[in-house]
Length: 364
Image 1 (cartoon, rainbow, N blue to C red):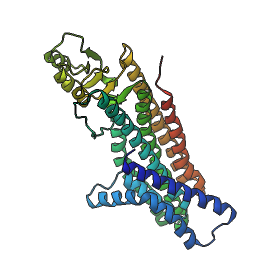
Image 2 (image 1 turned 90 degrees about the vertical axis):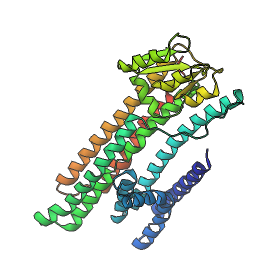
Image 3 (image 1 turned 60 degrees about the vertical axis):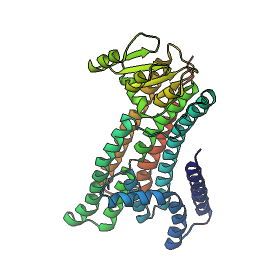
Image 4 (image 1 turned 180 degrees about the vertical axis):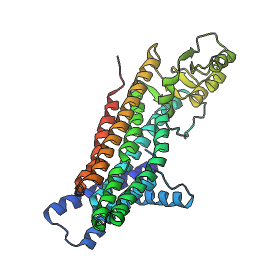
């Protein structure tokens, strides 16, 4: 665990302890003063959210407004505005936990690569840092959030403004409904659970001594239809011909005279304990104990986590859509606990579904 990750873990623990303590305390001694209650909940909120708020502010300055940090900030501040302080803290806490677990899983896999091969290849300089490439599904979620976030904000504003102006409804009621729409519309269930699927998949692969450097590999490997191994008598031109004909190629090499092949393959895999440090540097994944079924095993994990990720997306959007419709059409505004379920409840269910990927791996 890096120094930055340790600091984040401390912040998560401190926030969780403060948050849980306040929640339990209020069960026995309710805080009746609105100002005091706001003040005490602002402490755990600021501990966990200041960097999210900072990133959101920087994004606004740069003109990159609608991202996950902006919506998390907007949703949590909105929750505070309608006095749902526990919801405001919970939103950013869960989001931060998801980001932390994802980063931990990826860095653990990369550290395993370095440690194993540093012992066997003392003469090679292995990379200590990698540029994390998100999976196609994660990239899709990021693009989705850029459209979804302003759409939810516009819907929330419309819910607040249109009924009081055109239907002479009460401002207070529709302000409550609008902020509830903002809370339930928060995409944290998707933003958290989808990366967790891929992180869990990387962890599952590591059980079989298969170490994946980037989550993007878990999507890309499913698109590959051709496997070329270091044992076969194929040249760099043969791989290029396959690619020009629309094939996606996985190359399994050791780095002994085949570094160029590893470099140009769609998915490069360093295999065996005797592969070189340079092969490890170039590879998208490293397989220590290679077998004839190893690639199929990784593909099975990749396919499963993609399925779980899509389940989370469809489920989250469907539930949120139903609650948003109820929020607008019901004669009375929906209870805030119902809106909270649409956010935190759905998020927890999606995270629990993502946890199924942890059980993958170690297939015999």
